[in-house]
Amino acid sequence: MKKLSFLFVVAFSFLLLTFCKKEGFSERFTLLTTPVWTSDSLLANGVDASGPGEVLANFKGDAKFNKDKTGYFGDYTGRWWFEANETLLVIDPDADTIPIYIYCNIVELKELSLKITASVPNKDNPLQALPVRMTFKAK
Image (cartoon, rainbow, N blue to C red; front, side, top):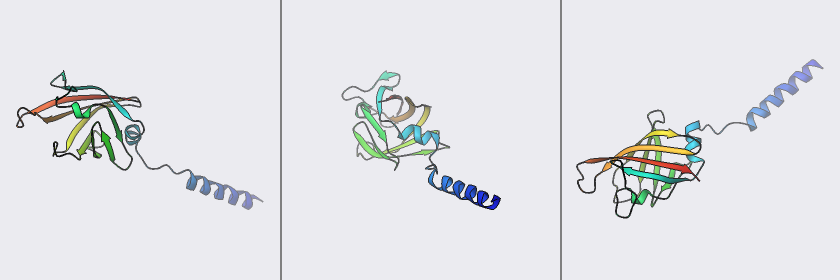
């Protein structure tokens, strides 16, 4: 009887482990990919840069980071990924107007808040980088 009970426990444990496996995503990956984010503030050099014609205007609106590492970021679509132990968020927009990867330092990534900083080319002087800070709230 003890053998039968032992085999039952082993079989049940195996089934439990098999059917309850985690997807293998990190906490930061899950925090980033779960909500649709909406822009809260888009600043360049500490000034609002989300208005028409401004450097961050096309990032205004919603952003969604899909689990397959594609997504949309305001008016852009493209790819994204983490680097540097998930402290950097790299965005590769499918746009001729931004022919570079955007490396974003993750300042804060919580269930309801995403804050990133980066440097982007200055549209008035492409050789000069503009410091930007973008904050998003979960919808």
